[in-house]
Image (cartoon, rainbow, N blue to C red; front, side):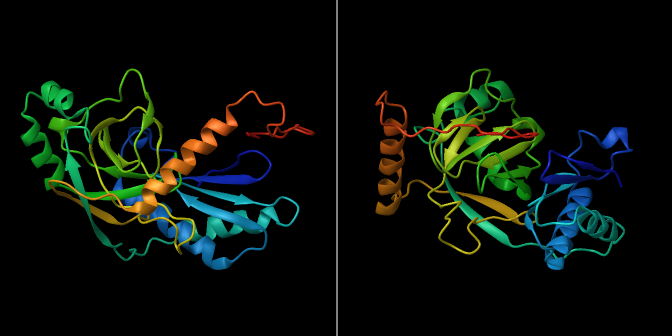
Length: 262
């Protein structure tokens, strides 16, 4: 399996790299291998490894280059990639969702494009069991598939500047849930009250790769007081960070590195 460096503090194992027809496929079997390999590398507890992240068809290992022997990481990836025993199934998680209206502003347009009623879109979306293939974009954001082909919809041509926390969206064959308010371009069809990511919990993410999600339509829900507090706090921080106050914090780049972002 090809293993390549990604900057000075990460390596990536790419699965099915030599199979062109699978390059853009969402393959549960390949993803299961990636998850199993990631679990195996974590179990090695290699010194200096900061995180091991499985994706649709790859595994990324992030490490401290000053505290890690890269050869040990490569050896662990190669060793685990040869193992093909079945992985135990993940959890089944039910996610309550209010569809349409303010919670799902794109439901009507998705329905129009599909030639269906909004109720039919909801029925199709909620009738599937979705595999969590990976977490990414934001901490705790689950990429799930497959969406019913009839309601698969492309991303919005212009992303929204703000998508509410808990928003359930569709992008092509995938469906996902925004764990916090953020910009986003997925077609938003509903919203859930569940908290997808809490850094104070172990594990912090509600969902994990390999889990199965079932959406359950509900008429309404009450947002907890803690979420309202969190939302206000994030808005205050955003406003504070975008002021022109000369005393605002700043960062000076002393030395850049490959793939370094701030």
